[in-house]
Image 1 (tube, helix red, strand yellow):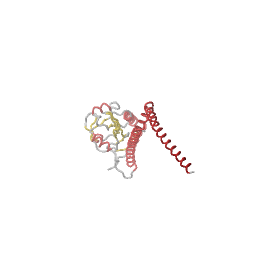
Image 2 (cartoon, one colour):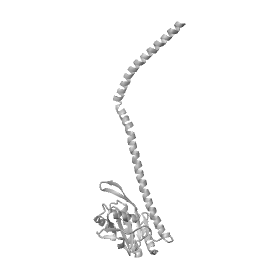
Image 3 (cartoon, one colour):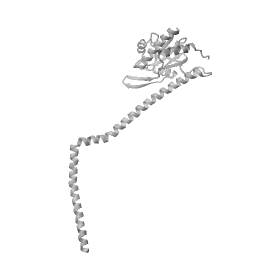
Length: 273
């Protein structure tokens, strides 16, 4: 019995040793085959592994860059929209307070400025005293909105004159002083109306004037010297003392603009100091 157990144990030991040796042998050959397979995989499927390698290593970077780009773009759009809404709300509140406030004096829109007209002559707000004025801020390199708005303003000015006999002075103030020189503005305003007055000036004066009129503007795309300027699309009706009366947004067509200005002028009552 004891002998049988010893023989059984010995056989088990031999089996284990044989298995171990076999496994080691197989492992070596398997390693060789694995190496061969690996080599084959690298040789025959090298492009696949390389592509996968690039995908694994490059994918997080490219996706992260794309994600950051999307977030940056979304952030800029949100910022521009928020600034526009804030400025429009400020203008609306100032207009409403000027019309509905029980004892409100001047609206907080408009103020002194010192600019240069399209003929190279220094101009201040006092040069417009005694006249009804509509002021629009834009820039001469504007691809579509500014030309559309100025054409609308020009048509409305003629319509106001025809329907009521009231002479309104249209004024264009540049928010791009770096490119809008006196000569550039002079050539630009000629395209819209003979009475359109173009104003430009130093960056500091333009900034001061825009701030006084609650006008938002900012460069948005820049490639060398080619860029656009995002800005408020608003026309300001100013009374003969260059005090703010009402603003008109982009949603007004020629008839609405002309009728609205005539209505405001006819019912206008100067605010007593």
